[in-house]
Image (cartoon, rainbow, N blue to C red; front, side, top):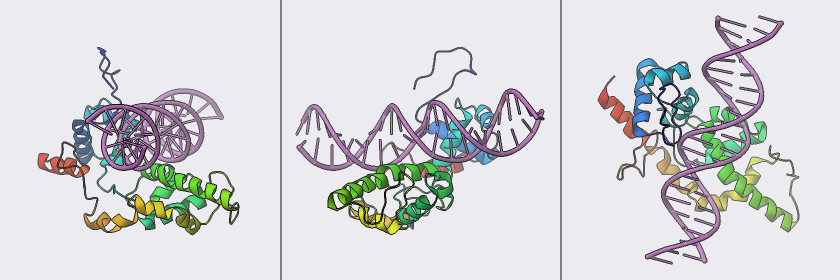
Length: 198
DNA sequence: AACGTCGACAACCGCCTCCGA
DNA sequence: CTCGGAGGCGGTTGTCGACGT
């Protein structure tokens, strides 16, 4: 994560977690100049990051319309339906979920739904094999509601259903955990940006 | 109270596609 | 028509925090 002790400034490329300063620089720059060619944007903004890294950070985290927080049951259902239709076309799926990013959906799928699918499958195998022939690999051929039933109990445990109501009240997202401690939220960054002016 | 394990999320990497020179 | 650069996408990995033992 450390910078290389290198003399030439154009070789120096930062990796790893973004700092608050970097976020602010990126937000400010895009607010003033808009998105453009990411490589030159990174250079012009003075960020020692690759264009790709800047793009990813902006799209997945800093964009003002990015909605963060728990995926609602409705969104889960939609994700599963679309995934059954298109498979791992995360960006395509993300287009149908306003405020959600492909990365977020992808992570959600891998960490939660896939796990519950495995559990459901092993349960099915023990209990008497699949109920409707869900044997295809990866690109689900099962109906969405079937899966909901398979994983919803655990989902409720991990806070899916319970947080639906708190989800939207704040508009973008409620920045629940951050402000008290030293962690900053995107909201903070944007308000700082506004304070700074253009 | 300490240690180990698991889950969630952010970020990076490599490949593919598209566009302009 | 070909080549190179940039953007986009999906897969994978690393890190951090929460939870259980």
